[in-house]
Amino acid sequence: MLIQRATELGAKITVEMIKDLLDELDGKAVEWDTDKAETLCKEMIRKEDYIVFHYVNGAGKVVGLITIAETESLYAGGKIGLVQELYIVPTLRSKKLGRSLIKKAIDYARMRKWNRLEVGAPAYPEWARSKAFYIREGFKEVGPRLKYVL
Image (cartoon, rainbow, N blue to C red; front, top):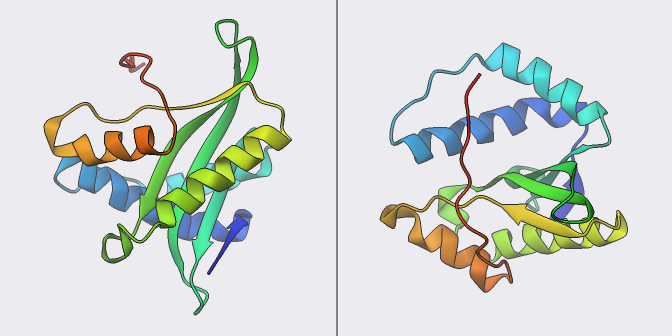
């Protein structure tokens, strides 16, 4: 297995996996325009500030991914990375693939000289394992994140 940075050619599988993640988080199929999402994903991948790493198995199949957005903040003293999505196919969870993707993200963050890597983990009881995973991997709690949908 190997972890590689996705190119535009990987947009389709990236979109499929993120759709699976969103369905899982929501508990039902979410409304999703796959064609629009794939076009947007290709545009984002072309930029240096949106990074997708795919975890590829020995058969060449993508079985996990992590997406990171580079941004800046005063509170963090400059550039940071935001983990947007982390997804492993359900049959391969608890096999350390997530840990490998986080390590890749941390290595990338250090190479880019970011000051920190942040992630929002669901605070609901049914997602306690996700939060525990990030804490186990060295993330610290800094409070909940909120969003305003425009």
